[in-house]
Length: 110
Image 1: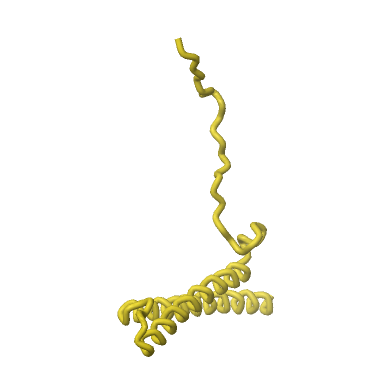
Image 2: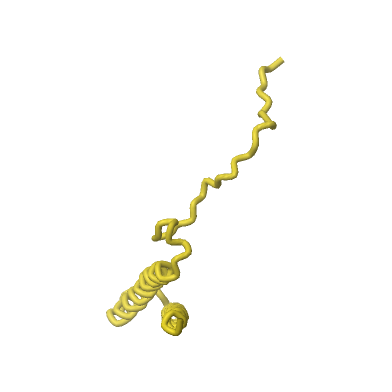
């Protein structure tokens, strides 16, 4: 008869996940709206810069008769993505400004 090991089913499963979501911020800043806005700004700026780099590189390639990385259509889609990303970031900033102004007004009226 082969030697087999039966798993211990009485041990409680671990409640700690192996995967940890990435964040630029320390966990103590999870509830800090200003820190969240700054982290979002970093991510959006990096993404928009990448989109613009790819579009610009493809434009140069087309101008020099080289094979572009992106088609004209794909370049247009990335420009739309960059524009939408910047608008989203502006909306986030506007919301945070409105919130800060509201808190300041309540603090000044008290």
